Length: 156
Image (tube, rainbow, N blue to C red):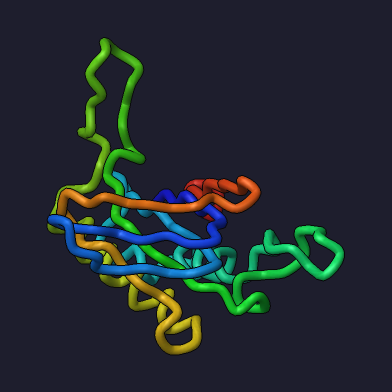
């Protein structure tokens, strides 16, 4: 699993011109799943470690402006968006290969579980999600900018 965390002042997802999710200050999280990810992934220690890192990573400003506050402590929100292109292989030619992305049925189950698990770690209503497999228009105001990648290989 790969997660791209973008610290935002606001973010939203539109599908077919309709707003389906929106958050204020917090994270826009792009989530992708690869060939090593499967039904047992949510039971793996790295899964929990990545979720804990997401909500406890101290990248929000304290009263002095220093990145020293977590999403939880800042009262931030999370917008999760599935993103199979995080597993694009661009080594050959000019057209990326997505063969390393998890099959859609596997990825959808994992994305749903990820969303449920993130929601369980946050106060009610602080986690929103895009629509899996939809052609989404994602809008955000990247605050900082701060963009951080978490990869399950680093937590195994």
